[in-house]
Length: 188
Image (cartoon, rainbow, N blue to C red; front, side, top):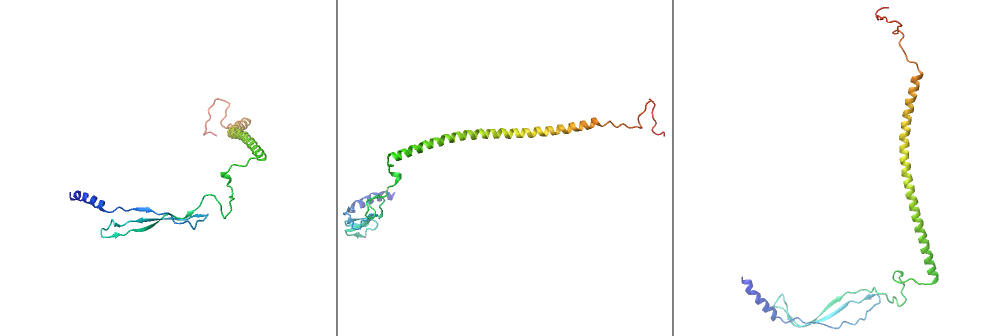
């Protein structure tokens, strides 16, 4: 609660402090100007008499304060380099020179590009057909392998049947009788 009573006193003390007056002086002479770098910009400010804000027991007399406002930096603008006024031209930022020879060459390049694009489309279509035919060939190859295996199996079965047909059946000679009499296996 006591801090609320001190707040107006703080504002009153701020009003009694003399204002800090800053006035820029003209810039120093640009004696060291170069075509490659900008010089640093130093400004001088006149400061009147004032009490230091952090310590009421210290007072500053009027004096000049120098401040570097802009450091030295490279001059990146195109201009005369080394006394020569002719700058090399960057082709990316300038229009191409136009004459009949250049126009004829540009037109022939455009025609060649159009022909290459058309041939590229034709080649793409042929490549797609080739890929389809290759896939069909793979499918046919798999089916042929299955059919060959089946034919080989059938051939083996046929060979087995033919060999069985050519050989007469083997019948036991002892057990055959021409009569209906029973045979005693213990008799001689």
